[in-house]
Image 1 (tube, rainbow, N blue to C red):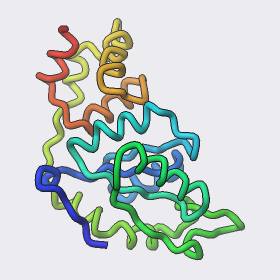
Image 2 (spheres, helix red, strand yellow; image 1 turned 180 degrees about the horizontal axis):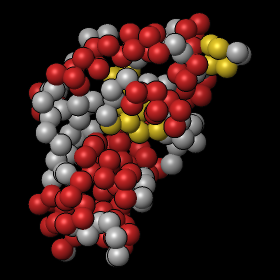
Image 3 (cartoon, rainbow, N blue to C red; image 1 turned 180 degrees about the vertical axis):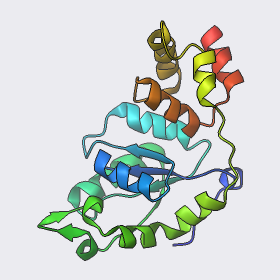
Length: 186
């Protein structure tokens, strides 16, 4: 499947949606920088709200298990945020020891299915909008950091509250230090 971009998204990396943390780890090992696990078929509303916001700045690729729950997740996500790019994995490639899923696939097979997306990400010169030191400068880490992070969680429908996850989410949303500072100062 060759990637299709909206013009304003062509210069950004993809955001990958998977089912669980094992899938997330595998995708990150393949070079996928922005990955959001749904936690399974009972997706929290905050996750789809966050994905809807992310969709404003980047294309979303669904990397879901080729089984009933994976199809259900795809339907839920697309009903809430609209049509997404996705990979179609034959079920026979995703079965190991009686289990079906992306986590059971050989890494070479998964990489092959993701090749057009990973290739795009490798050659996209997207500058990350925030640096690690920005989080210290903005007071998002350390004393009072959690309160400031919670303001961002509420404003941007972030599904996580830990410093590391909030940082990842802000990068997925392509927010820069100036914008984050404005929001925190309000």
